[in-house]
Image 1 (tube, rainbow, N blue to C red):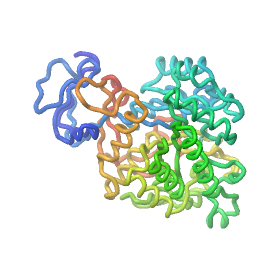
Image 2 (image 1 turned 180 degrees about the vertical axis):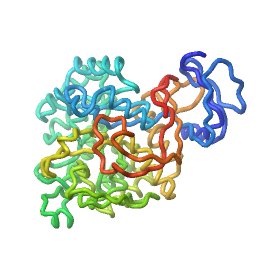
Image 3 (image 1 turned 90 degrees about the vertical axis):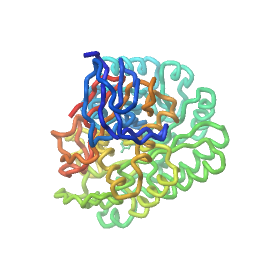
Amino acid sequence: MADASWLIRNGRIIDPGAATDTVADLRITNGYISEIGEELSLTNEQEVDASGLIVSPGLIDVHVHLRVPGQDHKETMATGTAAAAAGGFTAVATMPNTVPAIDSAEIIGDILADARASGSVRVYPIATISRGRLGHESVDYAALVEAGAFAFSDDGDTTADSGVMRAALLASTRTGRPVMVHCEDAALAHGAMHEGTIAARLGLDGIPAEAEEIVIARDIMLARLTGGWLHVLHVSTGRGADLVLSGKQTGVNVTAEVMPHHLTMTEAWVDGDGSLLHTDYQPLRRDVPTPDPMAKVNPPLRTPADTSALLAHLQRGTFDVIATDHAPHADDEKARPFAEAPMGMSGLELALPTMLGLVRAGHLTIHDLIHRLSTRPAQLFGITGGSLQPGTPGDVTLIDPDLAWTVSRETLRTKSANTPLLGMTVRGRATLTLVDGRERHRL
Ligand code: DOR
C-alpha cells in the first residue's frame, strides 16, 4: 500500500472555498488530493469508510500556546500538536509568551526544528512585537519574517507603548505579516474575572469590558494611521466586536478572531454554572469549589449579552476566524487559589464539539463553521490548507458530528487538561486527521 495515499469512501465532502457539499469518494495520492468522484476504483491506497462522516479540509488554529520553548511542564511540541491533531487541526500558530520569548531568528529556527522532529501538524511560530516581550523596544521584524515568523504578537499582554505598536504596524506594511494584538489596558485589568455582578458578589476584583475596548479602539486608530494589518485576538465583548466592524467598514486593515469559550460561556462559570449558551447541550452539573480557577481565562468570560453579540458578529462576518487560545497550565498551577491561578483554558480538542453545538442549535451552518475554522484562516494568512481541490496537499480531517465522548484527562491528548468542561459528554470528534496525507490522529 502506498504511503500517504488514501481512498476515503462515501463521506460528506465539504469544501467551502469551492462551494462543494457532496457525498462522494476522495482520493489522496502520495500526499496530495488527486480526485473527488463517485465510486472511485481502489488502486493501492488505504481505504477508509467515511459513511456518516464529514470530510473537511484540515482545521487551522491561528492562536495556540504550545509552550515551546521552556514550559514543558505545561505542554510540549509532541503533546500540543497531538492534541491539535486529535481536535481535527492540521496547522497551528503558536504564541511567543514562552521562556525565553520568541524574539530571535535562532529561537524560531529551534521551534521549526522541534516541529519537524516531534510535531504532528504544521506549526507556525509567532514572534514577539517587542524584545523580550517587554513592550519597549521593537524586534527586527524583517529578520524574523525571513526566519519564518508567521506574525507578531505580545499576547498575554498589550503593547502599551503606542510608539512601539505604530512601528510594528508600519513594519507589517513591508513584511505583509499581521500584528496580532492582545487588547487590555493593564491599568484597568488588575482583576481575575469579568467586572460585574458576579465578581462583586464573590468579592473578587474585576476586569471591565472597557479595559479591552479602549485598546481595540487605539489599535484600530494606529492601523488606520499606518495602513498596517491589525489582527485583534480573542475579542470577548460585544462593543469590542462593534469597533472591529466599524474599522472594517471604514477601510481599516483589521481582522479579528473569536473563541469558542467567549461565544458559549459566561462569567457565571466562575461561580459553578455549566451552561453552554447557544448550543444544544444541557447544562453541565459541576461539582466544583467556587470561584473555579478552571473558568479563569484572559480576556475573561463575560456576560450573556456579550455572547449573543459575539454570535451575531460571527454570523454577519465580523470575525474572520474562530481560534482556540489553547492555553495549557499544569494541575498544580490551576490548583492555586482563584486570584493566583494562571489564566487560560485547554481548547484544541474542545473547539469542534462546542462549535458543532452551535451548528446543531441552528446558529451557524456547517459550511460557515468549516469556513471559519479552515478555509478562511488559510486564505487570510496565506498558508497551506483550507481546500480539498485536487492538486492541494492532503491536509484532511474526518469528523463524526454525532460521536458522543466524555471530556476527561484520559480522553484528552494535551498534557494539561485545564478545562471547565471536564466530565461533560459532548458530541462531535475528529476520527482521522491527515497532514500531507500522513496519519496524525485516528480514533
Ligand atoms: O487566558 C489566557 N492565557 N490568555 C492569554 O492571553 C494568555 C494565555 C496563556 O498564555 O496562558
